Amino acid sequence: MERNRLLNTSLPFFTGILLLSLLFSACAPSDADPEELILSLPSDPISLDPLFATDLSSRTLGKFLYPFLFQKTPEGKPAYQLVRSHRLEGSGEIRSLRLSLRSHSLSDGTELGARHVKESLDRLRNTAGPRKIRYSFLKEVNVIGEKDLELRISGGLRQAVDALSLPPAGIVCCRRPGDSEPKPASLETLENNDIVTYPKPGKYVLKEWKKNNYVLLERNPHWRGEPLPKKIRLRILSSASTGLFLFSKGRMDLMRLPNFLLRNPNIRSENLAFRKGGGVQYVAIRANEPCFDLPFRKALNAAVDPDLIVEKLLEGNADRTVGPIPPVHITTSIMKKLFSKSGSENRPEREVSLDAAKEYLKRSSCYPRILEREIDFRMRGDDENNANGAAIVGFLKELGLKVKLRPMEKAALYKENAENKGDLTLLFWYADLPGAWNFIDPLFSGKDKGNGGNRAHYERAELEALFEKARISDSLDPESEISEALKILLREVPWIFLWSPHETFLISEKSKLYPSLTDYL
Image 1: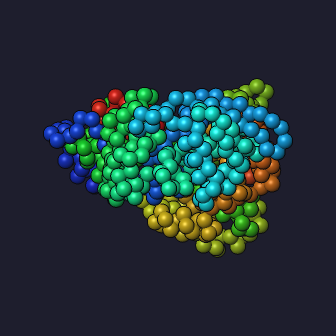
Image 2: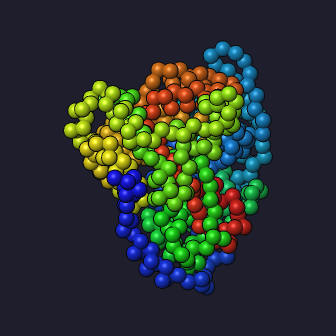
Image 3: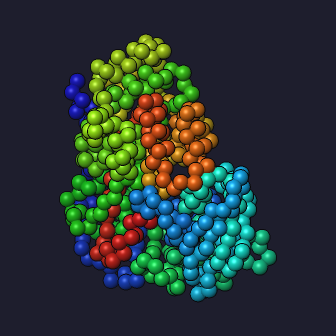
């Protein structure tokens, strides 16, 4: 059977797309607010509290509402947001990280001070949450001046800078009289009119939240950074087709666009923007199943042809990953360490061969019994994941495996994955921070199985040693650990490595005035 025939997975929404095309109009509504931009969110945020921002919508809103001490550039390099300078002092198990803050205005025009940051970091240290263990290195926070703090930390500088750049470390302000700690934005703070009473630290303040409808933000009047619109309305739209229709009516300014909608003939190229390297799609192979040994995992990777799926289903809008990492994050020096022979920098082709896959499978400890076992293949039940999953399963069936395709609701899929259910699971990972290391840790960390990010529940002693080395390092350049970890992962193939989709955005002329906005979605 020709491998192209495996990709004949028709998408049932094409008829709907054609109907939407007939409804297109270039007319903008007369009642549009010229100072308001409308963006799209795929779902209601679970929480506006950065400690519990575990979903994409919550993390997106957190970028507008809370500043960070540190941040990362798109290249994954450390940079500063609230911190003007830092200095690591002392020796021994606990050391002093001294921070000097830059000028930053709260929503009432007053200055964000060291005491505000201490209150927020103390809340981060003391509140139980899904990622509290990641901040166990932060032992004590002391105010030593109006703009100066001392953080008593264990471990290395790299761990501290990375962790303080992550969503849970967003600075929440300010503590109200009688409260033991500052409160993040929420429906409760809206009802209490706390926006007016208490200053906020972010680029925006929360003005309105209609559940399952929209969230309205208003720019901090004292914001002096990048150009941003005065108001942002984030509409909750589970269907991208609905967002596309609203865009055609002038009622949407910026949204993510799935690959299948790129085929709509009414979309103009000047309204498209692209970004690479934000995430990866992969298949997690359940690590504690004895039959899923190294020969079996190699067989799966040799059987599935990601390049063919990218070409036929994703229309070229993705890049095959290097192990788990988008190629845009792999430096030339890392490629040389991994793959070069006699000075050659050519990247080796992934071994994709049905014959090779069958030979690997025969070496598996459970062969030939594995051919009679039903393998549970799970994924989210939306159209695009259904199409990609069906194509991958087609390759696996060609290998001779019995595979049951199981589309699931997102909540149930992740809940049961955390319980270590499902043999093979098609998943997507958006890195909280840019850079290659963030596609390795926590995805293969033994301390982060399940909801922590390690969805394959994979653990290997030599990787754990690398993670410990990274966590105590004072170097902010993780290249040596990336190279070592990649060698292990390419050898052990704990996933079916797939691709990094190109993120496509539909942008209006008005949103082009604010080019940084796509970085928030």
